[in-house]
Image (cartoon, helix red, strand yellow):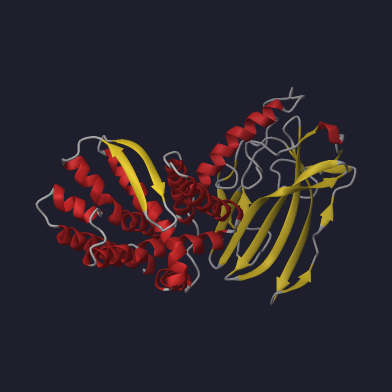
Length: 413
């Protein structure tokens, strides 16, 4: 190993954007091997080492639900594109207690330049690599070591090359790479597969959703989420049918209205009117399928994108407030929490959509009996089609209950 002095701190850029080490704050990677799970997360904070603002990367190793190692690694990138590994603070756990801090270290004025291939060991400088580990870096052949070796999870075959750019003196290339890599990283997170939830998570999530739907106080608040999906389904189908969506309003009594322009009758109008009550069930079924394929983060981002598209059609202040609050909550869960929390949240949301969908249909029929829903979707469909309004209520109930049973089968298998 060749000892090499660290460059002056002025020669380092703020973000690690190396093509194969894109430590963009907020990015995460997950590794699964048997009962062992590893989460690598780039934190939104830095550590000053020898005057250098180093990016902090947290590496957490779990066996089952127990953390066996928790490490904070420190990296920095110079203007030539080299990534320097500047140290780590590590803790090993047994039965929930720290038993060792061996391996913790921090770089001084000098560092070491490893020979090829590089194992990214102490205070090493790592030039741009041509190949690296799939999922963590790119296009390399990676094999997993024994799960019992907590720090040697991946055996990486990598060869090293000099930086493709050596004239970066103002950090502009780094800024460009940040923008490009951030998009790639978000997309990779959306399509990534997460580990299956621990035993009992699916059932516990269902119980939480049942409480949200069954308890009057919680339902009063949670029903706003159903209204968002209900009105969003009206608007989405209206646009699919070629109608012009004029706007959506959400009210504090958990009611809402979607206004679209087009023919007052015909298949497009019938589909638009029929979409509202079945919308939460259909969305819940789609989320259940994604979860069955281990795409929990995709569920959260699907909902987040849907809220963003809905936001531009909101036409009143309360509706704007509700959609923004819902979107902010989803963003925090999908971007800031660890993978276990994200999976649990995706299950709760999916169960809620499936379980909540039939209740507004029952409430609709109860209101119709009292003569308070003359302008409901079912009554409107009764005027547009040969089927009476009561038959449409039956269609809504059958669709939502059927989606609940199918979705439950996907979530519990």
